[in-house]
Amino acid sequence: MSCVDGQTRTFRVTPDEISAADAWIEDVGRRWGIAERTAFGARICVAEIAANVLEHGGARAEPAELGVTLRRRESGLDVEITDSGRPFDPTAVPERPLSDSIEAAHIGGLGLRLVRSYASEVSYRHDGVCNHLILHLRVAVS
Image (cartoon, rainbow, N blue to C red; front, top):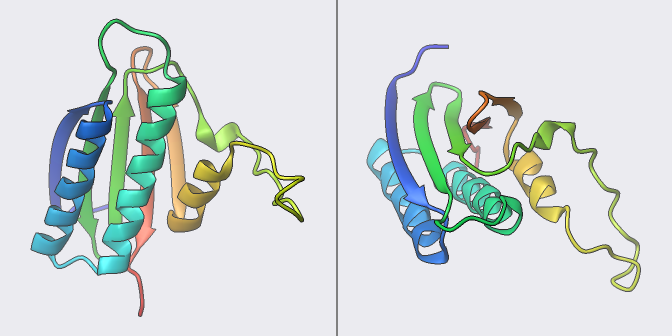
């Protein structure tokens, strides 16, 4: 895999910092000329993973950190998300079937469905300290 460009930033996992990550991804996407739909998908994926870390990452005195690395490829955009929360492999979680009605719907699980719908490739590893999630979003075709 050859990277044409790459940028990394670290954010604290707080609502304000998650918003800052969203704005940063939008800005990088615009500067790199990434299709708006592809950049939007990256923003949704990072927001969903950050929300999971915020909700399920474990009780801590200080907020967890979320690293976001964007790499432009000819075929689209790679997004690597690292976090210091509890180990969690989203690739090992089976996709929940959608409910037929709102009354029968279960809470949770839709964020990972969104991530999977935007990312054509998803890989995960834990290095003993941090979660590393790598997503590939293909160039969006209008």
